[in-house]
Image 1 (cartoon, rainbow, N blue to C red):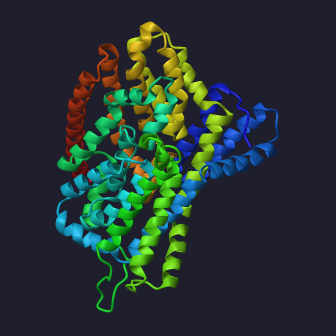
Image 2: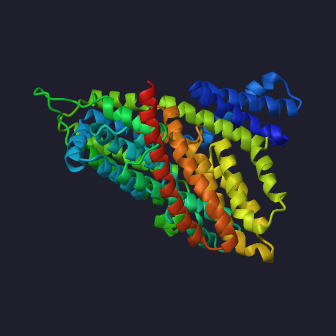
Image 3: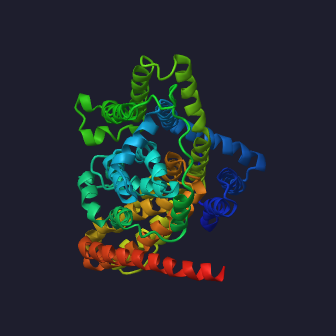
Length: 508
């Protein structure tokens, strides 16, 4: 099926802006996304001389196309969520919560442990979000840490880690976009220039250690500390009221899932037939992840049924319940995929925004800064980092092709990736943002509201860093200056919040 793109100019930015504005104003994502898609289809159909009925038909054509393109992702998420529910029903999550509660006795240690786990699962951002959320959610509930904080840590260690990990599906995707003899070497060279990814990881670690929250996140943390979270009611209990499950009932299925997912990606990509590992895992990562999720499901069956943690009928019912519980976030994903498809493939949103870059006459030293801002706007509007750097990288390589501009290629590519990840990080319609709130079982809009000030603070610091990097052509000065500025800004924002709170209490 396929659509012929029509470049509609400035009006092409309206659909994503409408969807994002409605989502933030109404706190309701489904209708906001659908209205955004409808507005995009109306723009396309009227520009093509078609009727309103054609616009409505195109909506479902696009949904069909995106479901087909992402079929493996849908199957993977269904199987993974079935494993999540089974682990919870077995009592494994509750047992792990008790065990981790004894080992992780402070909010600081829980935050650091979650950050470390997020860094370790660097193969795929969606897999990272759901796995880390499943494992750490009971610990955060026990220590009265907000689900918003969990969702933030998950989100901040998903795409930012994947975009700087040499062995990941992201690395292969970026390398394939660079029209260089050795695209993978070019990707490696961008890592120190990816200021947003590096400084975001620094911010997560610093806030986890210091507890210096600010803005809506600080309010969420105070609420969780006072009221806590609802206890996990899914664990099975024996006659004595104690859960039958053990820590191994959580750890082993998840561990098998992770190992088999990596092996699955390698297998699907042809690693066992001689294809290099870094290329194999990027060939069809979601197909490999699906094999891993199925392996986790089989492991749960072998562990739970013989020990009578649940009956075969209950096991199958839990699988169905798990698949059913993923339907709401899956609907958001399908709608966001469709909106991204309208913007990228039909009305030329990306082409319009990226046109500012090629038409700019600013000195080349401003190029990394300018590309960072443009990539951030594109990614935020379309909710996709991959789609953004897929559009911008070819343009960047063309801009930096002349001999005098060649030195700016790597800094500008780093800025492209950083801006793409920032926009994706705080966009309400981003896959990763949706999956992070899903993995943490946090209200999606609350996750966006609490995360956006943190992500935007890092982005502002990065903008300064790219101004420095653009004129020095070295990442280290901008990175060190950005790290110092970021920590100082966090301390300042925390202090400002602390000073305002007593004033509000006195007025009240």
